Image (cartoon, rainbow, N blue to C red; front, top):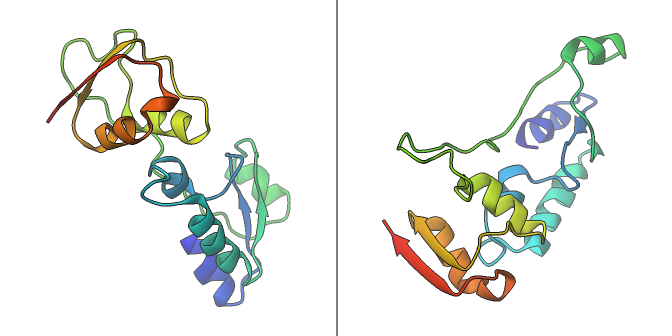
Length: 146
């Protein structure tokens, strides 16, 4: 959205194809709502779009070749940071082991992952989310570890 904003401010006709149902990327799906409320993010995105950006949400990936063939003069691929990183430790591929980005995105969409009754969090970022939103999850025991 930042690149689209500055390109539009320079006079370019800008179209954004967003894979998710709402724009905002990691700000929307990677930062819990208690830290960055949706209302604030929606206002910021509306301000960005006011410069004349054409936003299309729920879009499947399209190749740069296809977009050029469709009449676009240039394509900027800004894929964001939605992947997350698995720690290189034994067991990181077991059932029930989640990467922070997929966990946070599911929680922000209102469909938290099935995490069972006993939960251990490695690191502190998601720990605060679990504590503040514990009613959304179905666990009985929660343990944080740095």
